[in-house]
Image 1: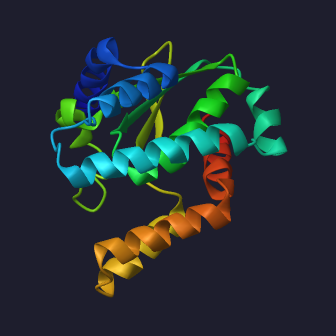
Image 2: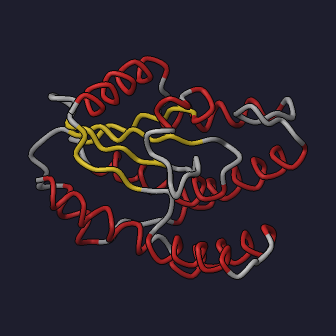
Length: 205
């Protein structure tokens, strides 16, 4: 119980420096203008990832559509929810998933999306590790009024996470893993993510 309270306090403090989706996109674009990205690692590789992810998000912003069943359920939400998302601009999984979170926010007047940067909030990130790693994105859904955590999701849809774990166990190289992960996302077209979020939203209502 004490850990839950401490976690809630940490998150509430972090929200004072959070970004809307629009502000997050503007931040990434401004940093890329100076050949930078978010986070502590400013290597050429991370900046290159950020440039690719900027293009991914632009494409998804234009092409993603919510599933009818999710869109209908969003209209039935009774409580106000805050979607807190830990991320960084260089993260490929974040680029594939956060545009969907934004679209959900647009579709419901009960949901507000707040984005916080992982490397500036490691005390929070370390409470949501995936197999011991600081994997992002991580979505934390709060009841807006009570501040209570209702569920968390991430860093990937379940089948994609299973694919990653299988590839790691088989010793597949990082570059090859990245290629196969993004092929999975391209074929899935956000379907698993949307269904997983719909399932979680139904549980907490």
